[in-house]
Length: 473
Image (cartoon, rainbow, N blue to C red; front, side):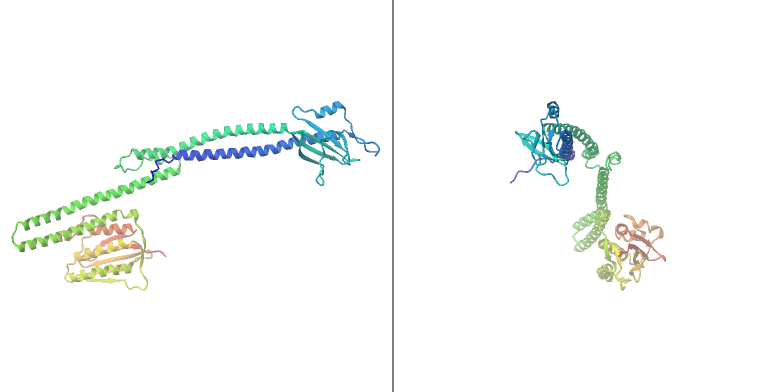
């Protein structure tokens, strides 16, 4: 088995600093190359201009040849020729050639350019002489007769000037590089300090502490990214806090609601064990089965309510064919309604166009199942009847209505029955349920952007209406 890699990844400030410094070094190298190229061009241009000026000055001292009988000559005294050759750091050569290329005066080793470009009066060239690199210019004078002046000098001064230019500019850029790098590193450290403070705050926090982060860490951050990270952490802590609250509430509800049926089951079992009559055993077993059924129904409702409490965290809504879903749920409840002698009917399901809403199929099914279960539990009239209807409620909503002819409720209880553990007088008398079904319906409707209402229009019966948003095409 390969050993695990224990190397730690670099810190964010180190990685950013490394990228910044590498970029600055590359920019410094490119800048030095550009300075060298530009400096070489302008230094060469300046020296070439001075060399050409010397060639023009030398051409002004060429005499003769105007009458055709007097030969060309260079009218310079030895002292003037010495001054022309004088340079503190360079060696200078010159020569004058006639129209036929014949040598007139100067240094024979300095040859003129073989040919000039059309229309050009001078040409520069690099050449070697006695192991030295020379820079020369050939100047053609179109006189009578024409002649050519050649000036050449060594390039040590040019190279020295270029080296100085490169050294001084490189040092200046290096100093600027160090100053800029220090400033950028301090800026990176300053901008990342809120992130380090945020990390320290999270490290010091206890696992049970789910309070929002201090505003000083999020609102006074140096960058928008750190603010968004703090807001995201606050959102995560809020969702975790909501989830833990729902879990604790669910655990408390289960413990509270199962205490009574479990105590009843235990008492009935103890009573049955103390008797020797099989008829008593059967009676107690039937009571235990009914208590278990009520306890299971309560647990299922508590689970549904717990899921509803956390439903907003990861709920996905989509387009649902409401008429088809209602028809499917009704078919599942028909056998139970027939066994209870309840007339279970539907209205508005046979429309030409499908009724589509924007919601969750599981939540809508839970809504209708709870409403039908509630209506069937309270069906106590001589001719119990339940009607499920789909009604248009404007261009943006659809009403899912469940109507029964049961005992109804007092108008003041319409809102309170949507809270947990709330039951009306009839529910308390019959002992049906735990007061959770309607609160589940209200929560499911809220999660889908709808609403839930209860009403008793004529003093008898109950109308439970859920308004759901239509699906937009």
